[in-house]
Length: 234
Image (cartoon, rainbow, N blue to C red; front, side, top):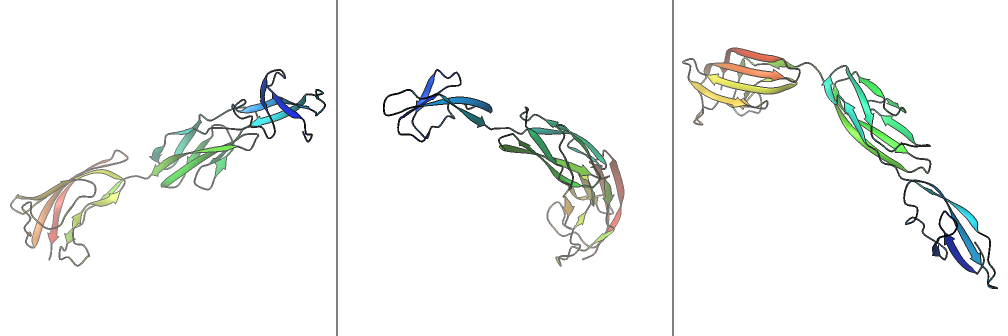
């Protein structure tokens, strides 16, 4: 209203007074998402009643919630996405699978063909252009492998200074090192474990041939048992 009279606001029933004046903040009365019709009345300076004028109020507000089944697996990985977001008329769903592709379905499925970690994002938008987003991480892995060296040179030159098990997609590695007389020199139980050429007591092991026993397990369930010899050269 542009007049100089008293402005009164009414609820959606056109009867209940919910406030006066202009501007008027109606959010405490219509806080839920949806479209509402309120009414406003201006009484002019002559104390004459004005006409109730309908005012349409659109309240936006959405939530985004997603899941993925499975969220980890081997390439190619087929993923079904679940959607626990706000539903209703006029709401759209925009998926970004994190690999350069997307979808607009409510609960899409997608096949990942590359080995990597991907962040899938869902953006939910309502008719009032209010939006919310949620993400889920997808881990696509390949087959496991293991590689054991046959020589190392612990001379602190920054190159090949430790004896360690390398490979891909390993989740468990237990290593034991023995000298030629069967005496245990070192052991570890960690995928990042290694031997730096020192004994369990901390002294430097001499040059020579040593022997390993390696027990490992890959993320794909593959189990490895390896034993053999290698050279220590300072």
